[in-house]
Length: 145
Image 1 (cartoon, rainbow, N blue to C red):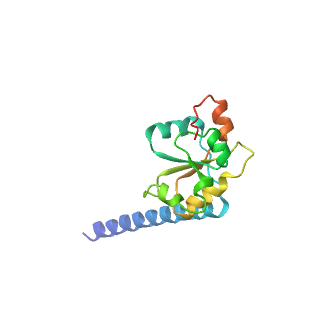
Image 2: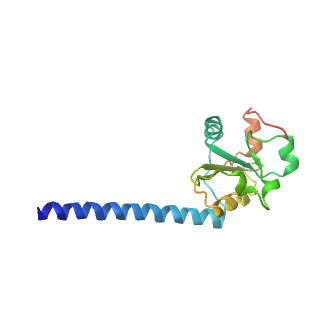
Image 3: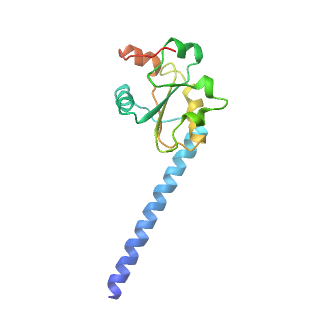
């Protein structure tokens, strides 16, 4: 009986430790997003699939003029909500995927949106490095405002 209890205590301790490490790693990743604005890349194909599934929030950081001329379907115009109102457009579930994009691979404007959503507590944040130019070059549809 004593050996079973000892084994059970070890299992519970290891499970608790694993959960703590996972939470700590997620928190560290969240802090890095909020501080640096750097986010992992997502492919056009994966973003398109997520949009079709309705499982992503897309944020366009190209400015209002560019947004009006053509943006990725469902994208939020960051220029209009950057100073207030972004939180109202985002889902309550902080684990929802959020993808920010700007002009293309050499543009760093997307980091503003990454920092903003990370500061609101979102943890699954990505960057479409191809940007709107890559999206259009791939023959994907755009919406116009």
